[in-house]
Image (cartoon, rainbow, N blue to C red; front, side, top):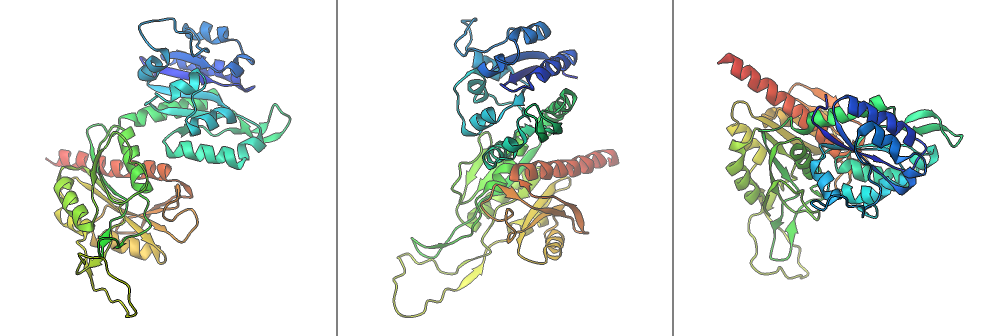
Length: 408
């Protein structure tokens, strides 16, 4: 199942390090070439020789132990890795990964890795529940790390609770799942709109909204990481856009409309996550509007409806996903939008609920088709929402195009 795959196994300083030996053995039995990196603390719990005997590969601990002058070891390993597993993952390594520290061989290598990363935490129940640890884990989830939840039971410290490292077979299952998703969108073009648009009143003032672009970015990253070619039309945002996708920067709704009309015909899956202004000033003043004692009246007109026009021009086989940020009657508005805009499904949320509004790293959404509810998702990171959105859209695209091919 892992024949020909290169797996980097990071082992950190926890009592669960002994389980990592069994994990390495399972990976080797499945055909993987396993390269173990141990932290200095891990060596205090288990000898590198144990891993060397099982993997038939040298175990790396020292960042500066460069045995092959033709390569830089941490870069070479990062480039060759089909996946990375860190088990056990202590609170220390989770914090370092979240903050981007690079003070040993494992953390240095991790900054160069571009393949799937699986994390199996192991620590005291109170440490695991600590707000800082949870914050770091959420940061890494948002970056697309795969997690194997720890088990509950008797811990080495004497406590009983959640914190035991998952069993090796569970870690292997998560690894296989992450690898299976790695290229399932290969050959598919995904178009995503993200961020907010700006409609100027004058050279210094404008109408916009609270959209941060984070949801659209997460969708673009999820599609990219699963092998898709991604085009992202991006409006206003204060965050850096994801790398490895084609970025088209726009300002106004008109500019986003023009860009969407130019690129959507070539896309297989279109996800309109941007928060586009519905109205714009009829007249944009060329000079700054000066303050005086009189009331100010601004006449507004409708902006072009991007999703509506995509729905009208929709090609056979395409999948269109819309978003509905609502404050009430979520189901009614979401289904109405799916019908009127010819969406395959609409991702709806109540932006008044904590954790589901603009600018957060989390979301609470439901998927609605034209006929009703497809699925409701609990509070989770926007990256997790993005993964499930992409999976659903891909399922629809595959089913539609397989059927289309069989009908010819």
